[in-house]
Structure formats: structure tokens, C-alpha cells
Image (cartoon, rainbow, N blue to C red; front, side, top):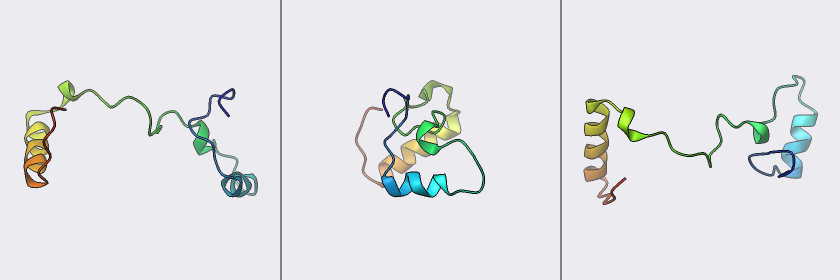
Length: 67
């Protein structure tokens, strides 16, 4: 799968399910747009309100990080 540029290795059951799918869509293990391991979006493009909301959530859930 690494040589085919896959995002993750699907299980045999997942591969079988996609082989029997009536629609031939792009397989999720080749979807780089929704890759869970991709770099996070930069926070400098957030609006002031979004930054404030994040700070409120961090305070509410007692999250102490510098991200």
C-alpha cells in the first residue's frame, strides 16, 4: 500500500466491501484530502471569534497546551 501512495492499509473486509460496491468511487485509503495524518491547518488564519471559542473550550475541558 505504501508503494501505491495509500493513506492507510484497509482491512480485508473493507477491501471486499469496496469491491462489491455498485458505484466505483475513489477508495478512502487513497483519499489524501481527508487524510487523518496530514498536517493540521495553520491557526493564524482563524478569526478572532474562532480563537476565543477555542480558548473557552480549552478552559472548559482543562486543556493546558501551547498549540
